[in-house]
Length: 400
Image 1 (cartoon, rainbow, N blue to C red):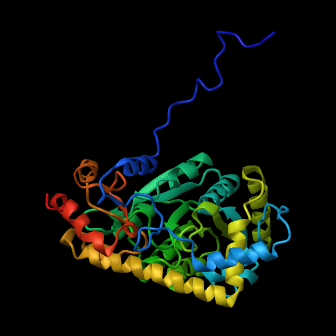
Image 2: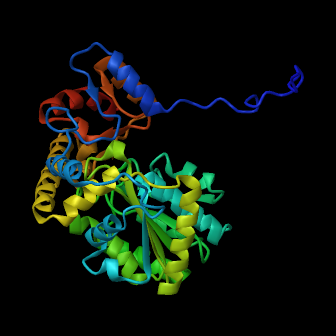
Image 3: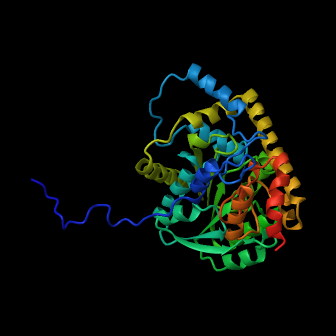
């Protein structure tokens, strides 16, 4: 006997079809393209001069140590690897960060997990808070906060024609934010634009947050790939020194090359040690319902690297080489056309070209240049040898 009937709605009939991920479609199209001179600037992974995304030397060495020394695969708990989180906090916030009672951190599955955990924490603490997000931003930002039930309020950020930040318009928009609202900020190396605030602008943002009672949520996914480890952390340190409350989502995907291992962390700064302890308890309770325990391997690799002076030094040297490569490509690309000149002063892996979606499609069809539909390119997908061909393919559209 069955309780199912022909008139009963099937479980999944109410679901709506979802648009496929545009970048995943680019991967498929690029692989199917037989042209030998095609250029892939879509997916956001670092590539070397040969187009490879290698495992970093220090990562390989740390993994070898784990294979030899790790005695168990037992659960670590919802907090994850506490030593990893301490070391990462010191890397980001300074040597005394792990001793700060008003700062609480936990390991997360990647920066995405950190953002989602932070969003759920905000929704639990202040469900009526609005999250102010500059446009454009990483495409996953808004879905993450909406999934937690939070209201999104876009604000001005980037001036596409000039390749710079429309700071006055941004500050004017944020002047409408209410006490307790959240301001999402890219700590460095903005995705997708590469544009960043100057030190004075960061101080102005901190002053605005202080004056209006706003809480910064800093997304830091590229420390070390802009101007160096300390320089890339300077803005975050400025914000936390000035403001009593903040959240930081961190990713090790790019600067440790641990993309598929999903390595991240979330820190909360509270007004007091007691408040931080309560926040951490709620973070762990939420994490228990989201992923139960974070994956260990990638975090253990980072811990081994940061805890060993030789491995840390080798990792920093390789990270320096990655940053130098990116900034060198930026300089070369910026010289190809006046409208590309702002790219030289931007930082990180990405730039947003002043191209329409039709021009992006034309560049792909006519010249085998693959980039996101909005004109975002992964700088690391270029080489000195391919920049000329790339420029030759897009310059006609820049002249229109």
